[in-house]
Image (cartoon, rainbow, N blue to C red; front, side, top):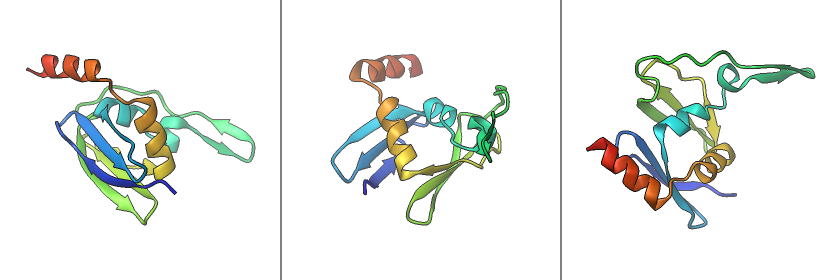
Length: 116
């Protein structure tokens, strides 16, 4: 089973992960929040009927990570600056998010230039 061995924020708007198999990547907080797996954000399936999540409305603090805590030995739960805290990111979900949203060196440079 793949597990993260280090999770940190090199900048307030970035999340970096290192994994037990040597894979590492950095993603934006916006990508991390936009991929929130909770029923409100992504929808849910109940007895064959799929209910889609609500409309995403920009709120102050929605991309500001307030806290990140472990859930057992299998997931993380994020609390965001706007109070949203129902997303549970299993290791499998977190790995998929970090792989699909990994920033290239060029993207990192552009973000750094914007932040200055």
